[in-house]
Amino acid sequence: MRTCMRPQLCLQFQSDLRTYSSSKVKRPSRFDSKKKTMSLDDFLQRSRTIALYRNIVRGCRKIPDPTTKKEMLKFAKEEFQRNSEVTDPVRSTDSGGIGDES
Image (tube, rainbow, N blue to C red; front, side, top):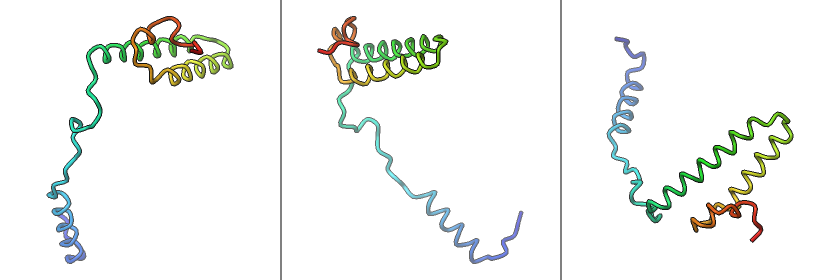
């Protein structure tokens, strides 16, 4: 065991360390949030949407031209961001959901 060259400093450090480690800091609960709990249908729709986005990104990786690849990824990202507030499952799964100007 090492001895401390400055005993006063070591004692102060140990005291601070004990205070820090023993202090009860209340962490915010993830269940206390004011957000509405997602329904099962919403959860399933969200997972399908994420899967669709991942498939699009994977498909874009196969595009040989880097400019076209970058353009397609940008387009997909912008469309998903533009439609991020859509809550109607029919509109989000409809073929006209992405790319429509309605």
